[in-house]
Length: 593
Image (cartoon, rainbow, N blue to C red):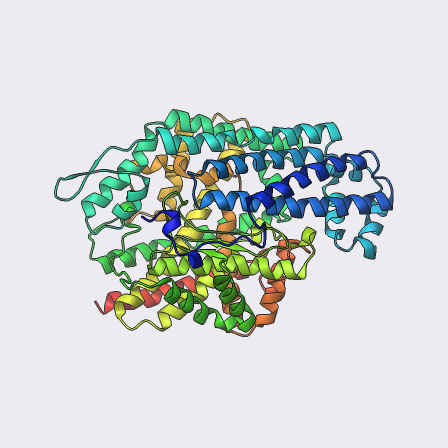
């Protein structure tokens, strides 16, 4: 792998629109420190219109600067984690984020003491138009806003709030060790997290099975620690929920996302009513692969691969062609991102793995990828550019206070891009193998994003409720609860390994309570948007209005712009019918085999 210095400049991030250089960053950091001290002026003075307006303007200015500083710091470290200067810079930015939270913790409690009528009048005042949503949220959140002292205490807990998540991360990167696994020829193979995904896709059925068992079983050897650590995280979730006067951790999580629990429950209900489709998919895949028995270790195996290798430019052009249905302004911005070095393209020594999009308010977005030329890399590029375009449209149309769309909506634009690209690639495939590849890619992604994430959502809700009801929850209960769900979701025709009972302890997202269900609702919403565009139920401009809306309304109301109403069963029915159609197309290849 190349060193960072060996990567061509045109494929590396340019952050000159953030800061000219590190010295410019330090100058702005020092200015921010001085300006943050000025926030204290407003404490105990948020009782009249002018002071409230000036406070909002001050906070807006500070938050914009803080986002730019933090984004610059973490992005520069992510492209070379061995850089000690970048490490130190990010550490001080993390400390500064906590300092900002503590310094501004008085704002919501003070405003929450004001009369509702006065606050509503402010929200309707033209001078407060950029802050109206914040004010309305304070009125809505009043029952859950604590005293200034209590808010300050909760803010200061930020320094250790993520300890359980950090324990899990440290365990995986330092203490977790895997035994060697045998392949079909009896050869012992080294196993780690990086090669595990390669082995699980290998044509060697023995290697796949042994890898799967060891991958889960290694976590089982630390079952007591991992159970204790996760249950500590669950209790933390419940503590923060009760501190803010919520009945349950689920109520707390959904309240601040402005999502009704009806959506969470409808997701689980609709998915579990359609588990036969998930099971049909794996039975179809068994026949297609010519296997006597389909096992959990076969889930990611797919010999019908697209062996084409794409240059970055070829991959980018495919994405642009596929997304041309969304208009020239959409694709022109993507071209500009590539030309202006907003995409960090290739892997290098010290660069983090994976891909993401990030953006500071009123700045341009940045996308990180590790492009190696596979079809999956092209899909990943489309996905991250979807995030970027959502940020771009929202940031252009909204004030900094209203531009940030909620996490509930965050995975929709990205999966709209992916779905459009998958349709484009399938339509233009020239061989049966390629067509099977893109059908399987979509169906596998749907399994991983809808069925699997909903299974996760059901597990964490089950465990949180047990703890909230003071039931005894042990490692045995965690394992049995998860194993029962696996059996339910996969059905009787898929061979279940006992080691899968430990899989829950591998999932880092469980340390962000009630997060995973949003992946499922995101893909379901994206499929509905793609279908609504295809059937002309909505226009491209309707979709861009949705992308441009930021957080100006609650997320369920914003989705109605694109004719998606998650409080009804309709979007779920559309998504499962879409899945069924692709599954039926895949079944045709089984008949012709």
